[in-house]
Amino acid sequence: MSVIVRDDGFHAEDWAGPVVEIAADTAPDVLVAVAQSGALLRVGFANFGDGRGFTLARRLRAQGFAGRLRAAGPLVADQYAMARRSGFDEVEIPDAIAVRQPEPQWIARANWRENTYQQRLRG
Image (cartoon, one colour):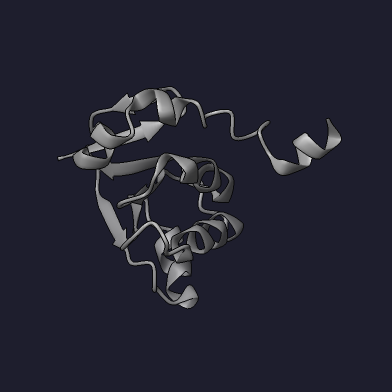
């Protein structure tokens, strides 16, 4: 099983439509066709140290994809703000990570729009 994380906390799966799985090493030219599908796009992260999925999300949004975009894999709460800033709507994590990093740790990072290094520098 897995847990869906959004700005307001943990959720169960609620998507009933088609899902397109995208690997982190997907070539950028493939994204054009994928961005035009009406499916939920689920970008897989092999491990929390692989940031290629963040780049894919940014490219998809730049190409005009306005649908639901999900990061999926062993991401940690500290990466939630980066996932949201790069264009993901939500993060899907394994149950084991949800146990190790419970909902309050993810919600603490849900203010991803205001909590940036630029805002801290501006004071």
